[in-house]
Image (tube, rainbow, N blue to C red; front, side):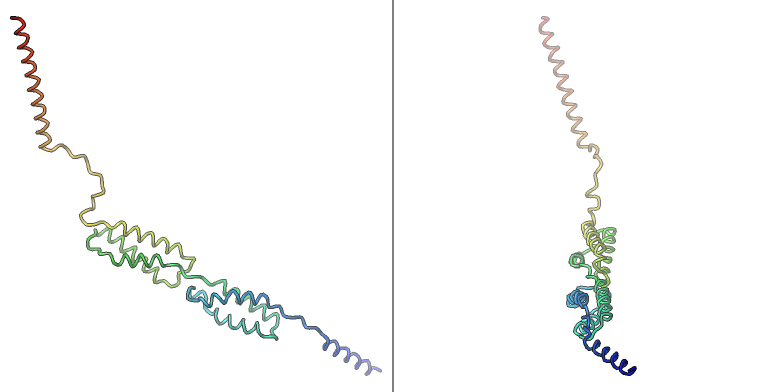
Length: 212
């Protein structure tokens, strides 16, 4: 009787296992993570290399896991978290189009005709611009640095001063009368004095004639 009870319990357990409905693994979060990572990997040249390092390999592993019918929920959840984190760290490269164009234009300027001070300011701004252009680690987070370099370089170009025109924009002091101006003034005064003297003589003459 005891053995019969054991056999019955065993058979019941086997039936339960056979009829057990497996809970399907939820892969929806993994699908979201894959869809987010795909365009980043496809346009990897637009991103700073250091910020997407290993993302392509991780995406491949995620796609394999997504297709695996025997994947566990734990594995799926872990992969989803890893891929989402990696994608969120991706950073677009800073937009340097305007800075590159301006630097190219600046390189074509002949500096021999400009003053040393203005050339020094220009050269410093151009050197900084070129350093930023060459820096491949600059991301969208560094865009304000690039934009400021454009403004500084443009200002230094506008500030180039041609030799011999340093004081052309400064206000000039009032010029005192020259020798020619003084002579003209003396001539006017002399003519006026003569005219006045003649007027007095004329009046005296007229009075003298009336008394006769």
